[in-house]
Amino acid sequence: MKVKSILSEGKQIQLATELVRLGARLQVLEVSTTLSRERLVKLYKEVKGVSPPKGMLPYSEDWFTGWQPNMHSSLFINIYNYITQYTNVRDIDAIIKSYQLYLEHIEVNHLQCILSFTRAWTLVRFVESKVLSVTSCVKCTGNFLVHSLDIQSNHVCGLCHVPSRAGKTKRAAAQKAKEAQEVEIREACAV
Image (cartoon, rainbow, N blue to C red; front, top):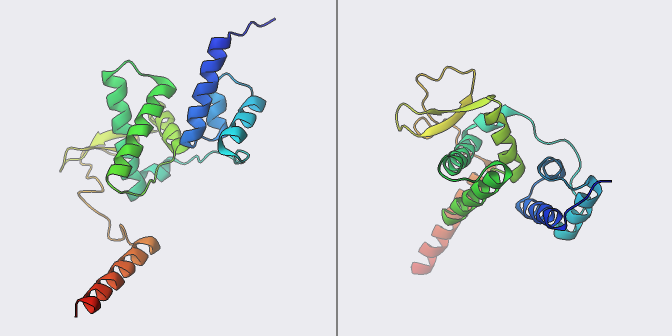
């Protein structure tokens, strides 16, 4: 018969609750805690008020190398690397702390959150398994994510060499139109 510690189970529930609040998918909870799937589903429903989403986790290292996702992913992985290098925080706790700092940075700078917790967790796994790696930009010396098999000797990041279509999404166009309309209204009111 397996003996369960109430304290360790409480810590696992607390960890799972934190992961759910950060947006982790059920598969991440299963890997990161020792709780049964049934308990995790119940906990997810209790915390979020809805059943956990079904389906596979996003699995494509290419997503992390697109222009905007790369900027956010690189920010996150640099935070993660700093935390693991200079503190005693490891494993899922390091991912949680790094993601919380990422979210704070996004909020303070009024940016759109591109990187979900599940993608951040997947990113760490990709870096640890050497599918993706971090390399320095030759212009700004910042550290950015790249495919591990790419030639990295003369890497120029997406901030130093912005793609021609960067930021030209429907949302950006709508925001620009809204700002132009607000300017017109202000000018009309000033007359």
